[in-house]
Length: 137
Image (tube, rainbow, N blue to C red; front, side, top):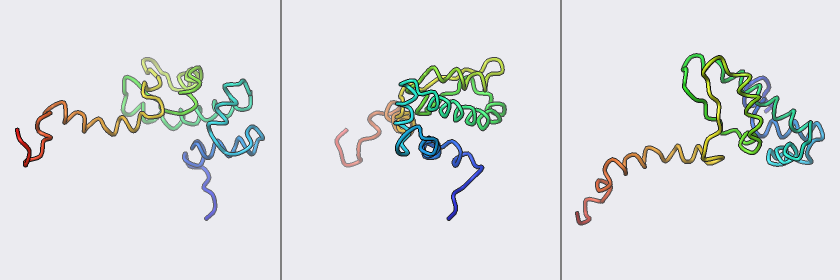
């Protein structure tokens, strides 16, 4: 199967960006952590790849923000979690007034924590309701 081109996944995914970094000689093998480590160390090429990724993400997210109009955009993108100063790049691309862009407080585990939210909500609403019917009440 030929590689995809033009879609968001093929352009901004961790794998795609890491492969681009290898092709440009920034890192030795495709690993986004290596790219971010290089960016943190001040490698201008690595920082440019991270900024380019954020600009592409912004172009994809902007129509959704215009449609949904959320108060905040919580970003769980790996590079901005390790390089928070890059958030300014995304904010400049996205803001049109009151939009606030920030990183999640759960870091790279944000999606896992979000997945548990409905279960925890049920526990908090009815803690005794989770007991089995065969157990003592």
